Structure formats: C-alpha cells, structure tokens
Image (tube, rainbow, N blue to C red; front, side, top):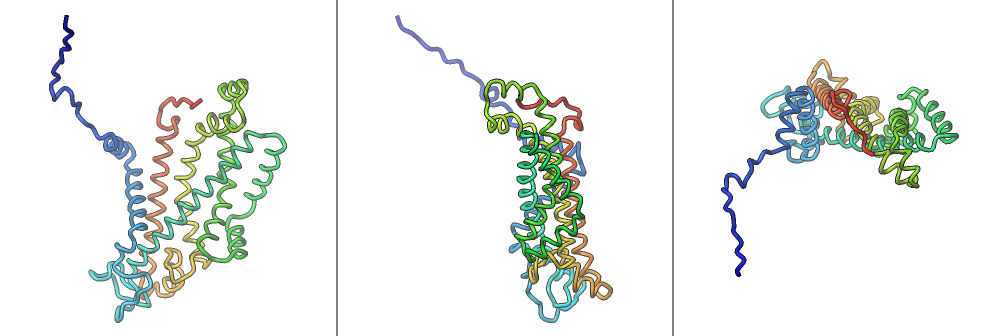
Length: 307
C-alpha cells in the first residue's frame, strides 16, 4: 500500500498577492487629510538633509570670502547674494541649518528625558515628593524665560553645549506639568490597580503600564516644541548669546552685519529671516498634524489604552 501525496498547483497570479507599499499609502493618506502637515514634513525633511549634506550642498565654505564679490545682489552665481565680507549667503544659510537642526533635536531630546522623569516620578510617587517637586517647578516657571536663559548663558558662557543645556532646563519645567497630568490620568485606570494588586514592582508598573500610555503626549510635546526651540536659538544668537562666530547661525546673521547693512544690502537680513520663518512654520505644521494623528479625540477614533 503506497502513500501518495498529491500536489495542488496554485496559479502564480493567485499565489502572489498584489504588493502594496504601505508606507506610500500612509503618506498619501496623510497628504490628503493634512496638506499643511505634509508641507511641514517636506520642509522638515529638507532641513535635515540640508544639515547633513551641508558640505556638498553649499558651493562655498561658510567663512570663505570671494574676492571682488562684496555685497553682490542675488544672481545666478550667488543665489542669495553676498555679505559685507564677500561671503556667499546661500552657503551660510545652508550651514546655519546644521546649527538649527542640531540645537533643535538635541534640546528637545534632553528636554523630553528631563520632563518625562520629573512628570512621571512626581505623578507615580505622589505625597511629599510630588508637592516639593511641583513647588520647585512653579517657582522655576514664574521667572521670565529670557532672564533665566540669559543668566545661565552668562554663567556658563556661549557655546553649543551650553545653549542646549540652558534651553533644555528651561523647557523641561513646563513639559513636565503636561506629562504629570497625563500620568495622573493614566494611573486612575483599573489595569494599574490590577498590576499593583498582582505584586508588580514600581519599575514594571511604570515601564509596562504607565509610560506606554503617556508616550503619545511625550511625542506631541517634542514635535511641537521643535519650532519653539529653533526660534529661541535664533533669538539668543541675535542677542549674541548663541553660537560664537565665525560659524553661521541664522539669528547671528540677522544681527551684526545683517542689521548694519540692511538698507544697502537688504538680502543680508531677508534670507536668514526667511529661513527662520520657514523652519518654524514647517516644524509647527508638522507637529500640529502629528498631534492630530496621535490624539484619538482629535482624529475621531476611540483609542484604547495599552495595559
């Protein structure tokens, strides 16, 4: 008695399902529902690429002076003109994007870590710890932001790391209040009480049940805060407390020679100012659209917590 295995031939067209690039479908749906957010995403991606490949995009170095090209208007050779020292403004704007992107993402990352630690720990531990921490946060938020940042930079000195540290400490206070509120709301859910009743430790409750339900709020704060950080960095560079020369910063290009020669060479101030406005617009529009996608109350869905 022989056992025979019969093979069923499957047509090749039926075996291979039509391949649909899910990422492209999601991107097309995002562009259709959030056109301003899509424009902001394009601007954000363009700034990131400009910052990464600044050496290849810029035709000149940021400190290279072209002989005989002092304060030239925009032309085919110099797209944004030149400044009073004969430096190509387009090249300096491209290198300035590296400063803005670096300060923006590094500051937001450090701010998010500090705010998450303060907000989650304050909400989870509660009691005297929560009262003391929140009173410190209240006192920190009561001071004018510009006074705090200028005082810290005056004590630490100008520089990239000091600027990131000052902006991070300033932004962590306000963000921690929002994260604390989201954590307090999450702790009222039954699955947190069930996890405690089953003997889960503090670390497991925070990492498995609390943080996953607060991460949407954290991401929203991070994306929306990028534009604010870039604007703050430009303002501090304009006041002379940002990145020291000769490395270009958009705010620094507006100050000094850009302000002094505004009437003789207006392009020296117009193009750095336009770069700041475009970057803030892109990050704000992308952040708002990303918030609408992550918040179930704004997108019309009934989101379920992760427990």
